[in-house]
Image (tube, rainbow, N blue to C red; front, side, top):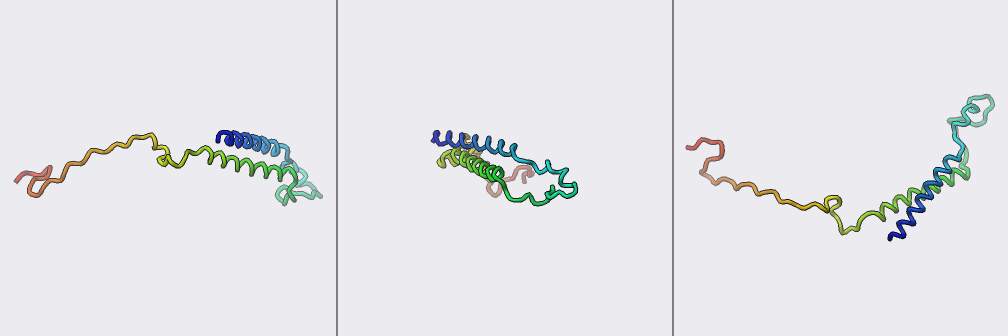
Length: 115
């Protein structure tokens, strides 16, 4: 099980680094802001960006791999279902002291003046 967890960690780190590199390599929308407001510009800052290119599709695939490996690590790291108490598994249960019995009829209750 530890070998599988280690393999998932390696894939997770590789996917995270790939997403970082691919996002930094892409051309940002803000870079064309000057051309967007100039005359005769074909693209606009707030308009459609066109079809996805290779970098954006690869980034989406790497992000999907990253999220799936994160979920896999969560499932691999959870304890076995036999331990159902969660964070309270190490606590010792203490019993509260019993309350005093009720007074039988005919006796005075606390705070009353005797007859």
